[in-house]
Amino acid sequence: MRALIAPLIVASLSAFAGEIVSESSQDLNDGFRLVRRAEKVSASFESIGHFTYFAYRKKILSQTDKYSISPSGKIAVYQDGPTGTVVLFRVDEGTQATVVNKFIALVEDFEWNEKIHTLKIIFPGKHPAIEVDLDQKSP
Image: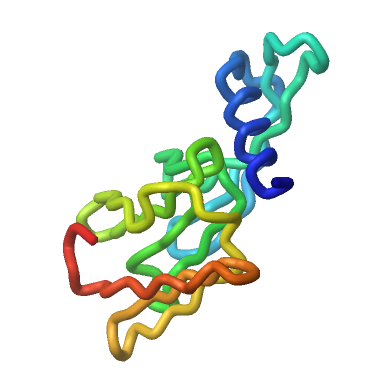
């Protein structure tokens, strides 16, 4: 139940996000970065929300801190904070493709195997891992 509450809280706060009060950025290499923002929110219990975004260059990909960049730096995967879906981002094409279209659980880990062009998405507990074929253009 706890795993389900976190994305819902994030989604409800982000729906009220507004003016950026402060921002910092952490370089993750290969053009990727984490952006941390304090934003004014219109929620009754807090006036400033603190959000983490995963970005490529100047493009915000998602509000999340669950992400992984492939060893080659050509692909990234992240679990979207507000929805819980898991998305691949291809640098060369600038495209995003959903590979898990519903919230299962918070992702525990991502395992890349670029030699055989696969990505394993690992969830906690009894949730089975999902293997993604990286050669498939729209998984």
